Length: 140
Ligand SMILES: [Zn+2]
Image (cartoon, rainbow, N blue to C red; front, side, top):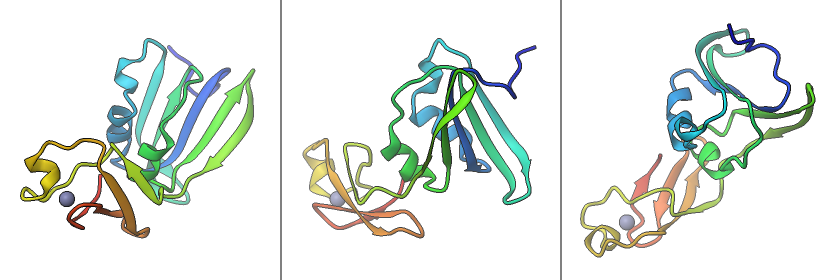
C-alpha cells in the first residue's frame, strides 16, 4: 500500500471541484510522469461536499495558467521534507496564450491554423475567455 496521507516531497493540489481532477491530471500532463501521482476523486469535504485531490510525489513546475483556467479555486501546497513550504491561491489568468483554441469554426485562427492565439478573460466567475481575433467566447 502506498501511504497517500503523508507526503515527504511534492505537491498537493487540493479543493479541486469534484469531476475536474481528471481534466487537470490530463492537462498538466501528469499521465506522462514517472513519479507517483495519486488522483483522488469525490473525497468528502466539509467545505465543498465533494472534492477531487491530486498528490504528486515530486516537485515539478506546474502550469499555473492551466490550473487557473480549469479551476481557479484550487489550493496548491508544495511539500519539502515533510513540511508545507508554500501555499498558493490561484486566480484565473487575465490573458492566456497557446492554451485555448477558438471554438468559432469561421474564426481566422481555425481557417489559417494559427496557433498561440491569445484569449482575454471576460468573466472571472464563469472562467469565460474571448478570442483576440473574433471575440468568440470559450472556456477550457
Ligand atoms: Zn476566434
